[in-house]
Length: 103
Image (tube, rainbow, N blue to C red; front, side, top):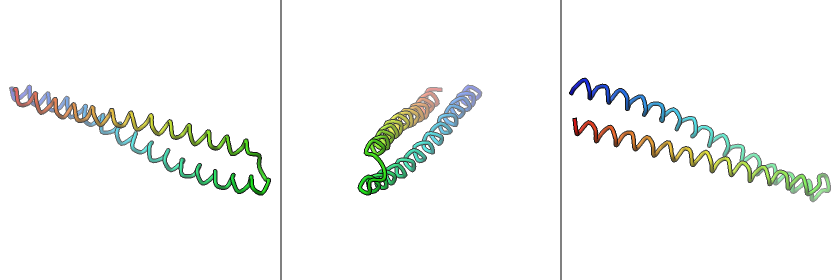
């Protein structure tokens, strides 16, 4: 039984480490995308000023706004993956706890 517990702990620990690495990666990716979003929003302000001065066409501003929407969609997708990974981590932890109680 002790060997079985140790094997179970080892297996679940590996799974938890893998999910932990995935969570870290996704967290980093979300942060980078959010920083890019801030930069794009700042770009919009510059484009608006340039449009007022007649330096760029409105279509250029529209392209920037489309990029912002794309980036927001990407952030939402990554955050969904992140939430799934966090749920998986909770499931693995709970599963380990329940199995150890039954051994």
